[in-house]
Length: 333
Image (cartoon, rainbow, N blue to C red):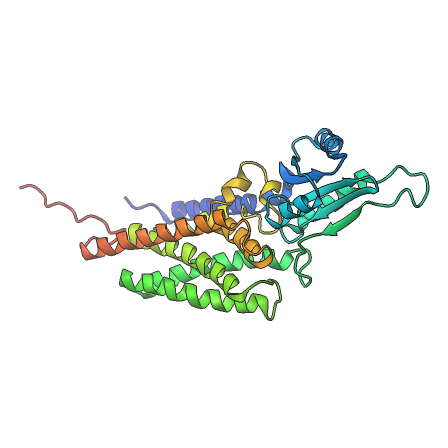
């Protein structure tokens, strides 16, 4: 029995209002609850033990503190992406090392942390702030990382749009798969050129940056197009909602996974937006350090997309288009 127009209008309005609430919550809630949660930092030097104890007591649960034998090892922890910052103690004073390329937000918090190690106020010289040195600096044209974070959403949205375009304009699934690969190649090369030339947001090798962006496009576009091919056009909505409402807010592209409420920061790193942001930082600023996990995550999603496209192609060859209703059985006479 068909529902009345009033009922359909009411259902559509309620659905839209619910979706709006979900979207506002998904995008605003993580940002409103940013705080350090087991942020990896290292301490070194003769006073490493007391400093680590002081930090643990002053900010319980904020930092995951490890000790290193000397300053060289502390710097290596930053360049290897094992830590976001380091506190180097010495008889002459305390130095705070940061890596703003890993997260400008965390670097700013570590700058503020340096105030805790200032000498007691006796005179102007004794009250000098500990030196803060940025070991791996963010791009000078984007010191706060706003441009870097601003790339995340368009990259994912355009990948979803590409999947929708291929689904609606290309009938054969095999050709859609070819379109995904071509779009990933062209999109990666073009996006990297834009980010490195005109916008000047990312340093690092051009081909490495282009490869990360191409891999991201292949993972997102392939999965969304694969869902549409395997389960019908409703798969477009499932993929878009997953990557936009869950993946993008939890990507930590503008902050760091350790600043998001747990376990959402960790979950976000297993979705393409979060893995892409982490891999881009590794390729642009850290010579590939810390790239293994995000690369594996993106590869897994790309493989999933290929499998879903293969399922869609099989269904098409078998004469069972995805999402099609079953033919009614003949009535018994």
